[in-house]
Image (cartoon, rainbow, N blue to C red):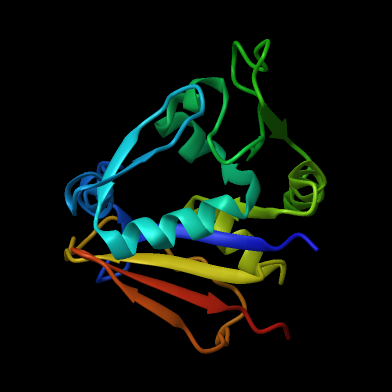
Amino acid sequence: MSKLIAIMSMSLDGYVADRNDGVDEVFDWYFNSGEVEIHTGGSDPMTFKVSGPSAEHLRGLTSGLGAVLTGRRTFDVAQGWGGNHWWGPAFVLTHHIPAGWPRPDSTVHFVTDGIESAVKQAKAAAAGKSVGVHGADTIQQCLNAGLLDELHVDVAAVLLGSGIRLFDGLANTPAFLGNPTVIAGVGVTHLRYPVRKA
């Protein structure tokens, strides 16, 4: 059965981006924390250079993904991943489909009728694999709706002090999590929590 897994990097003080939507500090570990190369694929491929433990963590996580669910802000910042996200078909929650989209040969889909519809479509496209959820607002919506199965947080060794927080919009707190799996990388700690259902 397909799981809904939140995947996000954040600073130790809980920010996923700085005041100007900059994410360099929280994503720096992807590119500068080791010598192991991971090639992402997709239309806009990247090469990560991470430590051995981080590489093992990333390979295990991404090999189980069949689709991605995210918000419009993340889509815009990522410039639509060139039309094809490396995790598989991407489902973007939005109020309005952006000009020039959908594009031919793209696996990016836009969902305008809410989080439940987006989750249903993404799980169908994942064909039994998990759906990776990205973006602070989308993760919050999934948590608030009781739809999230796991929470993966990569805690970067940085304090931002201000910006966009990952967990600011939670409606049903306290939200209880299960015991974490912890992997220490270089410049990052990978935390994986099961989400307890109410």
